[in-house]
Length: 170
Image (cartoon, rainbow, N blue to C red):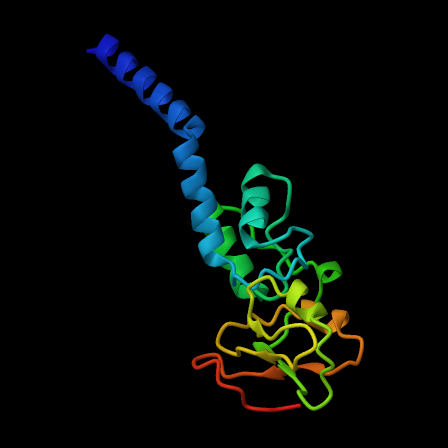
């Protein structure tokens, strides 16, 4: 009976070690972390998007508190998932702001198309030398388009969290 118990414990240990090393399980863990992130793709965490940040968290290369758009709610959710202590938000990455969408003042847009290149989710509609507009339901509020505009005709506008409908305009 003792021999069988020792063998069962050894097999359980080997299976546990193998499960941690299987690539499918690592990808599933990255997927679970990624699902908790807000999918803004803003890069404020110093990673080019939410999925690379999730992979860095799992690999121990990034802390769980580097996502300003996710705020404390996301930090707590990731901490619970990974059975780690929740950390205070890393303010060097930015502050948590209310949900917003970009709005282009079409009257002042010169059609330079710089904002098109910056948008990580292709939420800006337009072509060079033509006025641009933002597809508000697609905009994640990353703010990457703002700095690229040479005439400062892009601003952020607060939106309702449930509907993504614009509640204020430029």
